[in-house]
Length: 282
View 1 (cartoon, rainbow, N blue to C red):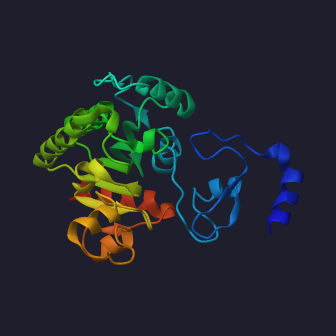
View 2 (tube, rainbow, N blue to C red):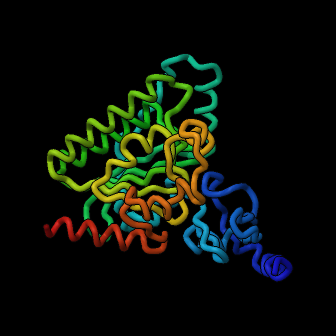
């Protein structure tokens, strides 16, 4: 199978498009850590970042996610130019942020804007795991809060795609404060009776899970996404029990009522569009 793919490349080398470093690892091949199959990246990209063999959903950059979800040409980015001030003067932190910004071509771990999803005007926030694993610092909290306030101002729904390792350690208590900040803004959104859809992708953990990620009116997840607060080892040591198989995976959480539905990536835009239309009619 691999030999056939190599032969295909030899014939089509000139037609292979270039991919941004933030979209996938450097190179023309990627190994699926679920089925262990060696995959040609162009084939994975054409399949919306999903393994064509086993259906594993690879992590996406914010750029590719927006392209898949927003109607073509409709996304207008807001809250630009918001960057952390490095409140703790953490050694090497600013330099690392600068390198990541250059590599990923995004300012922070979340991109927010106004767009249309199936012709329904929506405020869309997309977190990017390529930027410090989507960790939430002061800039991320501010961007998401601005997006929520924009939804309130325009009286339109809010959709957030979450992927995160949690609160950003380089900003200490400042990053933890973003949990209360974003949750407070969402409380105001709820008072205005506006719809908030939270979409959980792999992984969604830590302070993001403990705040805005789990506050959606409707909570959707991609298949087999890792969702939780603390790691399984910490939980086992705390409660003194062995955790069940599949604990903290989307399917387990759906069975236990923590999320509302699991939606494959190929159906995500259509599903969001239907929910937004139903809400508008109601």
